[in-house]
Picture: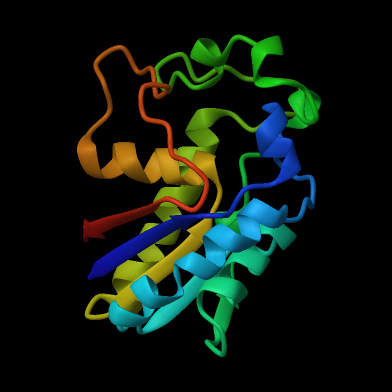
Length: 176
């Protein structure tokens, strides 16, 4: 399976470094332009099926980047639930603990990185069982993009998943 992973376009919350999580934010002007600029690239990839997080920012990205395509929504592609950290700046929390898979910090309401990993792996198993011979596009969020990166490239010895950072409207390609 050829797996294309697209992070949503920019939002005003991305500009400020806000942890959006379950917030249903929308693309800003630049984010819409980013998504539109992907049309010719994605068209050439001849994608068979598109899966997308149901959040507005990912849905807008998918619709602008792949107009007239049928989009399948899956909750497993939603952003990490930041719980008590949602709406906070990334600078207000210890991100090295928050994104360390070996520490796998448990929070009052925020989703642990281990639970996020399990959710993504469950989705990958679903893809493998049902779309193994297809070209699949996933439109999702930075946390899911980060988990997929480490799934395919291996987890660092110290468990810190912060080294890899995607950008808005970035596109990764994997063989699965």
